[in-house]
Length: 95
Image (cartoon, rainbow, N blue to C red; front, side, top):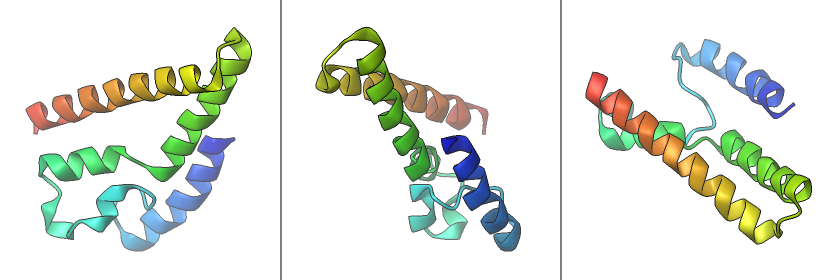
């Protein structure tokens, strides 16, 4: 459901702006000519709706595996941060 909400928000904004960049990512805070920098790549991976999805996954992880909420949130956010770091590294190396 979060992905659906993300699509409903981002698709019209992307079409109106004419760019294939999420409207809810932190990369929107940078100037538009900065799209090749590592900082832009990193901030484009940090999307507010993705953070919401990760938080919901943390609560689900806590409920499913009977962990404390703190332990499950830390676990899920660390895994998300690892995936973001790998994504930024791959995108930086290939561009």
